[in-house]
Amino acid sequence: MSPLSIFLAVIVFFTAILIAYLTKQFQNENSNYLPFNQMTKTNEKVKTIEKEKVVAETLNGRFAMLGLIAAVGAYLTTGQLIPGFI
Image (tube, rainbow, N blue to C red; front, side):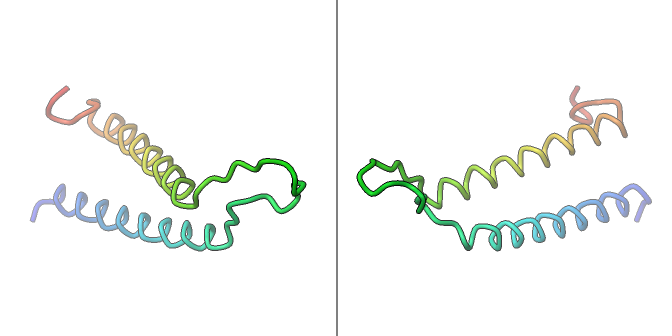
């Protein structure tokens, strides 16, 4: 096995561990989520947001940031945004 393939395997392993940790932390943070504000008056209309939408948007943002970090890392290590293409 070449040193490059070992390095890439280590990077993939640490990325998988990071995603598993962040997903578990994300689930713990959202376990106490309430879809409505208890401090509002009873006669006002309250716009509720479904828990699934909050979870989806937060997870989407985290994966977007992970993609940006990967793009910066690829550019710093190879000088190309997409190695082999650009």
